Length: 259
Image (cartoon, rainbow, N blue to C red; front, side, top):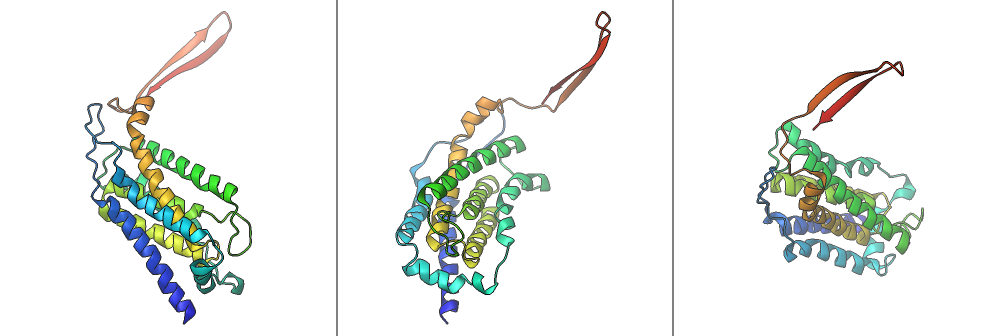
């Protein structure tokens, strides 16, 4: 009964966490075009910090005494790795929202950005996520529930999953965003199931992932100017010309490619 109850509590916590994070952003719409005269609103809005801040504060509160209380109770119910129960699905699921963010546009799903902008935003968001999550891992040194090392806080898997989920919501709307958040919640649950993280770890990771995605979109106007993405693209231009130097008895080929 204790294990069943801990499953229910943990699942409800992750569902509520995902729903609150998703709903906090659901009304935050971006009207974006991909031309130089875009009128997209990328301005920072304080309300965009509510969901990630709430997740981080809740996770930190749970992690203050990580091996006692709710953390320990949930781990005792879910963490059954010593009895041979383990899955590697979370190692792959964490990347699903991020891959979907980049590729759904090619499958005919209406997207607000072109592929170059999606790629730049994704790289920026994940770079921030990795810097924050792994920086905390090696500075906090929290012990994992299975005692494998002291890199438990926060969960890199969950942080990456929630980064991709929020990118999906911004890019493709609330329906696809809900799918991404569902995958992120499942990834978080499996990290607990595999005895790799405490409940507080995945809560903080959700906040980090969502915040990183938001920062990447705040930075997009700068990145578009810096990388020249504001220029209208008319496809790729390719030109080639043979070269010959009689005095050096050398030949070559000059290739010019403009995207």
